[in-house]
Length: 99
Image 1 (cartoon, rainbow, N blue to C red):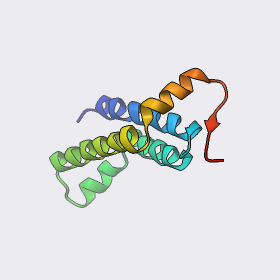
Image 2: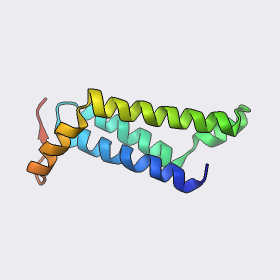
Image 3: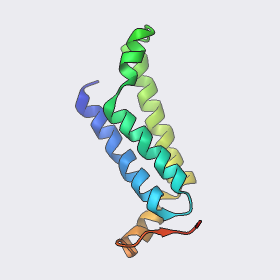
């Protein structure tokens, strides 16, 4: 896949990680999503995949599978639409309900 495709995949993950970190009750999920998005942007896994003879096709399939899994987790478990609404209501101040 071209380099810009990884950036396109990582931008929604960065957004989901940002919203999950500062609004709602699960900042650790947001931090984990942000780290995974950063790893997706940097794409160091490709060099490991080449080292262990993982084909490019399988690497792309694993990348897309991880993206779908994390977005499903953010939308369903993390309640991203509700937290986005909460963020738009009170943008300057974070609303972490777990603390």
